[in-house]
Image 1 (cartoon, one colour):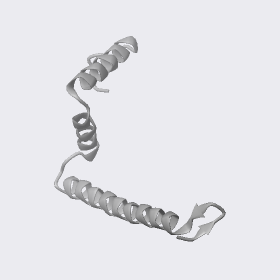
Image 2: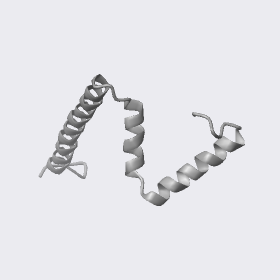
Image 3: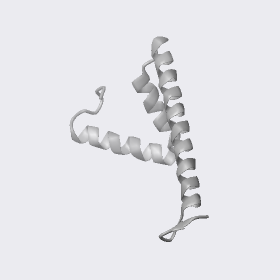
Image 4: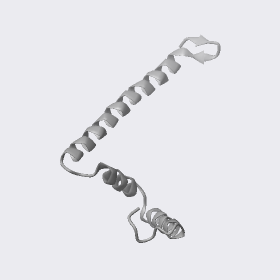
Length: 85
């Protein structure tokens, strides 16, 4: 390993290259997700609603219930309860 000013250059280069590979993979996955949403939209699905469903599925049941209760409280406070928000 080369040591320039206290930095192990080979190890640093390896870290940077690993990060770059993962960033490329992340971009490819992001593009794949966009393609799936485009396909769903082409089949008549509402992608905004689908994104919301994906977000909700990431939450555990308690977290989702708390968020729904808070949203309901806010809608009532603004006089928007019972309407489509």
